[in-house]
Every structure is written in C-alpha cells, then in structure tokens.
Image (cartoon, rainbow, N blue to C red; front, side, top):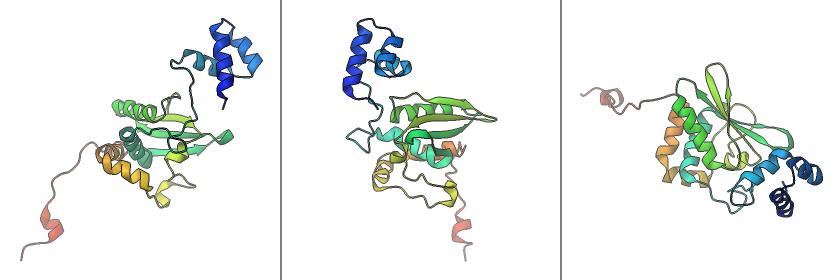
Length: 193
C-alpha cells in the first residue's frame, strides 16, 4: 500500500520522538499502521508480498494443511478494495484444532493478524488479505460442493511433498479423528466361490 520512502519517513519521525497522531496527520497513514511499522523488528513490513505474485516463499507444509482446511470448511469472501477474508470454520469441541488452524494461517501469511470469531458451536479463524485468491484459485461463485474443484499444478506439487499435512487438514475440517485402516475384503471382492 505505502511505498518504502513513506515508511522510512514515518519510522524516522517516530524514532525521533514525534507522536503517532502527528505522523498520522502529516503522512495520511493510520495510527495502527504506524504502530505496526514502529513495533515490528527488521524494518519494513511488506504485507502485500504474495508468494505467488512475487518471489516470496510459501511455507509448503503449513500451506498443505491450510489447503485441506480450506477445501473442507473454508471460504473466501470478497470485501471492499479488493480485500478477501479467509474464514475457516472450526468445531468448538476441538480447541486444539482451532489453535492449529490459526497457526497454519499465521505461517502462510505472517505479517497480518489472525482473528477468532465465535459463533454458535464453532469458531471461525479469520484473516484478511488481497492475495488469498492467488493461493486458493478454487475460489469462485457459489458453494464449493457444486463447483469442480481441481488443484493447480503448483498445489499438486506441494500436496505430493506434504500429503499428510493436506490429509490432516481435510480430516480436521471434517471433524474426523480416526481413519479406519481395516476393511472386510469380502465386501469389495465378493464371496469366495
């Protein structure tokens, strides 16, 4: 949103002791943004860096887990100014899974906060970013179960390398805590002759 020159001016003014209000009025930057620039170590915060649109790095294992969660109980919603909200619905019976969903979102997009929104019986893990559709091209109009869902080649490669994380996301979103590793073969093969 803001160029690096604006960030440098703001950080220099804040370091020199100028108040958030004064810098905000002078540069037209919100106090929350200024506070974020001031408090983050390592200088500039680049919230718009998209690992798909730029040369950024996408953490593959957390993304595989998040992709499974998104395909199961996630949705993207378009908001104002081209921003999207990623919402993952998590059953309140499994608080550890809510924590893990939040950790996956944070790992994939660490420069923005992740919110929890309580509803009846579930908690939504929520994050805002313009580039969520870049990471989830499966987004489209209408319910996911009525659309054809295919993974892009780059997503397939991540899932190939991290299949357990992807499956865990799918299982977690389906509230499935067990996998039935045994089957009765005669059900599938038929009775012996």
